[in-house]
Amino acid sequence: MFYTYIKQYYTFTEKDKNEAVKMLNQFLSVSMICREEGILGLENLETENPYLKKAIELIVDGVDEKIISEIFEKYIIFGNHTSLEVLELLLIKEGAAAVSRGDATNIIYLKLAPFIGIEENQNIYKEFTDNK
Image (tube, rainbow, N blue to C red; front, side, top):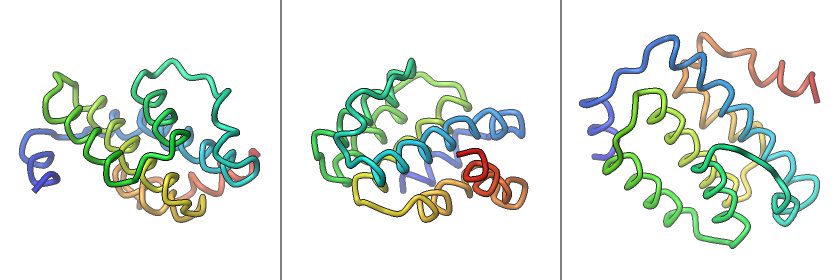
């Protein structure tokens, strides 16, 4: 039902998807920090995005993935956001839940990439890992 709402009210342009790649990469970084340093490694992670900051706080506090998803669904539904902001919030919602679950970085990539068009962005994960 939630994704039906999204599809009904939002259309994501190629520009939105290209901009959202930054958020996907940020979540890949969050995942890698968790894998290498543990969840507490996120405590000092700096970000200007208030929603990403909130997601990181929830992950560090050990909030259940379902609650994280519910919180971000409400931000999306009851906020006044552009299509790009909604796309980024979707990535944060799904990425935070996956990190909270302890999913591997490549699995998180596979869960987030469809939001921005996996066919067009199939090399993002390879490029991301090559640059680390």
